[in-house]
Length: 284
Ligand code: ATP
Image (cartoon, rainbow, N blue to C red):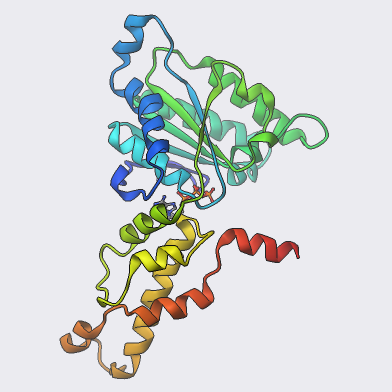
């Protein structure tokens, strides 16, 4: 409520258990972000500065935002979010102001994590690609990063799927000088992600998540989440003829019958494409 949609502040509720695959990524995040946030004295004793900025790099829908929320939650830190493209859309001067306000709020609430999604839209490489708004925003962001006290337990995590497209000045020491790769899940990761998204779903015993994981090559977390949602909608469709649309309630016996079947996933697979594929199809 304090901010508009381009920014957000609330206590994150996801944990590492809500993330499928990405075990090494989580280990790296714990070491680079959780540890310094929880035990800053370790770094003080050694006389080294804990990381201020971490860049998460990976394709869309692989869980970067979810990871940032989880690490905030597990570190008992407040979570602040800035959405790159949305903050760019603000009127002259408004974007920088919003950026400053979020940094200020995050500083006040430390320990905190400030997450900047799609940082490439705020800070593309300087030169022709940068318009006036970008120039001012990059300059503002650099100033804010440099102004962070090293002793403060605030970590800025930025996400991008095009690390080569962001302004090099952002990658200098003391800014976003650490990089963590968030990769596309393998079959095991996909199995874990499917498990997470079907946790609360009654499944017919014929639904084989291992098999489903094997047949969803190229699907990222967001695709798999969409697939399980689509399968659930299929199950609802199947039950529709048994519903009395005049009535306001669903009879318990109909509700009991509402179970997601193997075939619901087969149907869902016809409609949900892996997002990497969609890009290929759009380009073709
Ligand atoms: P973008 O770059 O498009 O912002 P992202 O990498 O930040 O994507 P998220 O927003 O974290 O991806 O993920 C989108 C949704 O996909 C999540 O809300 C979650 O439902 C699902 N998801 C993605 N990755 C995972 C994962 N590794 N484990 C569980 N769920 C996942």
